Image (cartoon, rainbow, N blue to C red; front, side):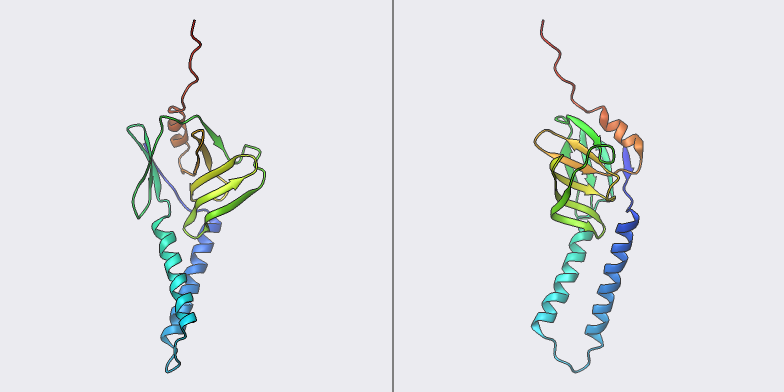
Length: 169
């Protein structure tokens, strides 16, 4: 089973804005003429370019399920997560959210990924293309957020939720 992952409106706007900013900076560098380039300006320009490239390579392009594993497709490579310890799947929009903060991650450029923290859910990793419309996969100690476009993908994942052990008689 495979699902695409398309960017939400905010992520599209943020991505276009950052690219226009990078083009403007590049134009300023090339149109500078005889003016010397300061080391600070060069560092800042390089850092902005590096951040944009980094965000592209780690952005989520889609999801698939193969042999009991969730595969998160990214340009830099696939992130493979075993589904054998999946305890539950929760719709982020339907749970009591509380306050969410990005602790180390990206919040708009090519999507939303990295480490986030929520006072109700706890800490979780996000591999999403949507800011609010995603699902939390609960693996016990680890929680992961994903945002597949096709609802059938979540239904397929629900088949991997581990059932509580039957009482012994």
